[in-house]
Length: 281
Image (cartoon, rainbow, N blue to C red; front, side, top):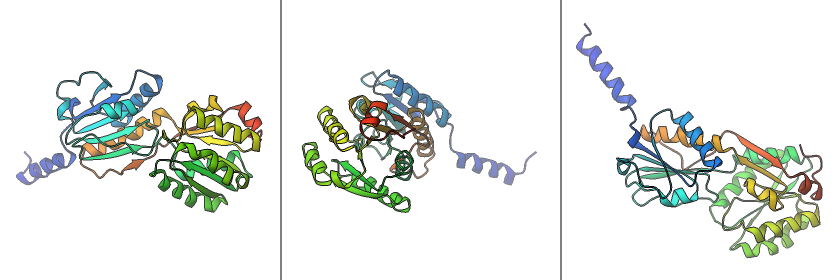
């Protein structure tokens, strides 16, 4: 029969591990029943490794979800629909820098759609070995920190980051006129206040006229004139969210932003040829 000391040690060990997760402890909200969100949900399930409740944005919350300790949103619509006073809020597949957490949330963490800055710069440099100056454009102020991280990552590779933070997307033509002749490539931040059909067409015209590739981190822009998309994989973003959800549930410290471990590069062959990136693989 175990001694009292041994029993106490076992109880303390179990307490340190925390109580097993219940489905109502974690709520996952999807913006829609689309492949991207289903992939993210599958990745979340792989990494989280425990029970959770899931629903689509706009649907009634499952029984007990109001007591959720962690709320995860995949997509902008889901992020707006998320609820949970006192819950830790995690969001991904949301273009833009930050999303305000639900009222009463005890903290928030974002899974970026763009790769880690050093990986993004390295990939662009791999595709374009002659790259020396990369123009980085955004509107939402929070992207300035990402641009600074790009600059730190680019220095050892011999890549200078030219920062162009705009007050509105309407200033993009002025930015391109001011800096365009002195750069080798352009990266448009995944910023909803920057990206629209008009700015995509402006970037395409600039790219094709000057033989300067346009890089993005939103796959959907490839058919609108972007040359290359370098973006985190949906399933990998889900796995990143699952890992930090598990940490948040266990009371561990969670960073304000995390990056997926895997990204995908897609190239529009026609746009690459027009932009002078014919050697891209």
